[in-house]
Amino acid sequence: MKNFTVLDIQQFESVKKKKELYTNTIENHIVTAHKNIHKPHKHSFYLTVLFTHGSGIHEIDFIKYDIQPGTLFFLNPGQMHHWELSEDIQGFIFFHTQSFYDLHYAINRVNSFPFFYSVQNSPVLYLEENQSVYFSSLFQEVHSENQSDFLFKNHKIISLIDLIYIESTRLYIQKNDSEIITQNTYSTTFQKLEELIEKHYKTEKSPSKYADWLNISAKHLNRITQNMIGKTTTDMILERVFLEAKRELISRQFNFNEIATDLGYDDYAYFSRLFKKKCGETPSDFIKRYQ
Image 1 (spheres, rainbow, N blue to C red):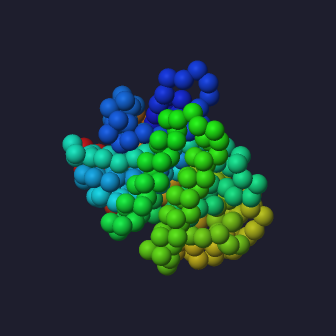
Image 2: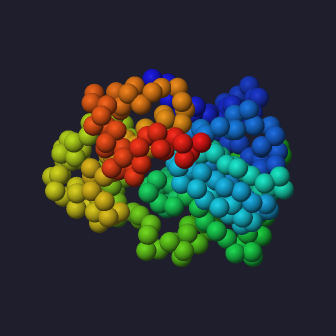
Image 3: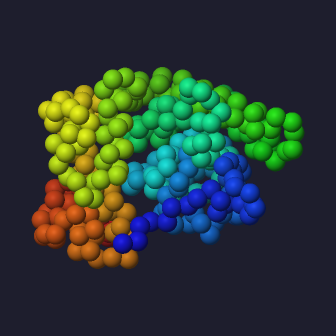
């Protein structure tokens, strides 16, 4: 079954050599990459975008976020998104592969930052005016440096991006301290669980199996997920299943019976009832509302 388009970084520039970083202004990005981004899609890279002027809506995995001057977004690989932007929109965007960042540091990893650590954490940060001016200067410098041929170009870009992530993390924790998932013993297991669910959610729905893979009891795994996000292991598995169901529904390439089968459910009627119970609406109601 065909999934949503997953855009690779190579699709955004006509280059002969392998590219691991892309930078642009939002205005130019929309014009040059419109053929790739006008429909909901995913990326294989980490994306950061700052809106400095204009307004709109940014929808990430079916959650809508308002866009206003000073809005900063962080997207993990695999998240689906699209946006509706006003004609006067302005800002900056950059994205890079995991190796582009990780290879420059012996200890630091890009997914150690809270907005990249877990998809359960919020992908948005709303900046105050003075903060927006400061971040805008950093994004501008990243973009300008990337257009240059200066000595130690990549070193400076990495340092600037690292500074953006560090400054963003400080503000992010201030604004979301009681809600974010941070790194500790529980969160390490939680992140491994997220990775396992991403790999196996279509074929494995049993919390006990995931607990076996993590070498802990199902009861303890449930305690961890309840502690981290107030949800059960089953809730996490089903949330991933129905996120994919929604993605496939709006692609309009397959009927719901085919989608149910693809996601590991042979009983279409049961899957439909489960969808309504977990999502609060029937598949057809979801499609009508989304359209």
